[in-house]
Image 1 (cartoon, rainbow, N blue to C red):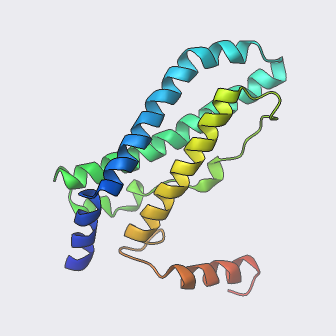
Image 2: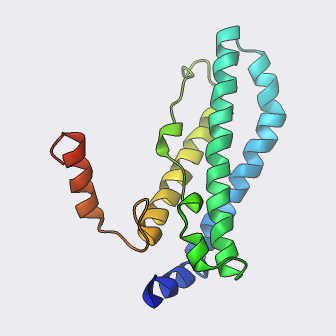
Length: 163
């Protein structure tokens, strides 16, 4: 890890961008928890059996994604507060989880509007945090910044069997 990387990470965690993302992410976690424990539970009971089962799966995926967001944000705050070293924060176990978790199984007409809104907003925050994670820490298994164009070329080559 270079001093330049450490300085950039410290600058990021001290920035307004981080503070805004932290507030938005944690507020979304609280909002989703309140919805799923209250009105969402009632809305799911009104769904047909198949819809209620799909709702349960979707709410678990939503909760998992929100916990990934919250964990990432809390690690960055721990770095800022010097409760965690930058070297520890670079560990792969603190990177954002896979994007494959977002596979909606509910048809729009069955999905309560509030759940759809939470899913959409969570997806947006997850994508933003994922971009930040990649910009700060690089692709999985690498420390420091990454060359996004080069990585995209490598991913395309691998996807089409040319890598």
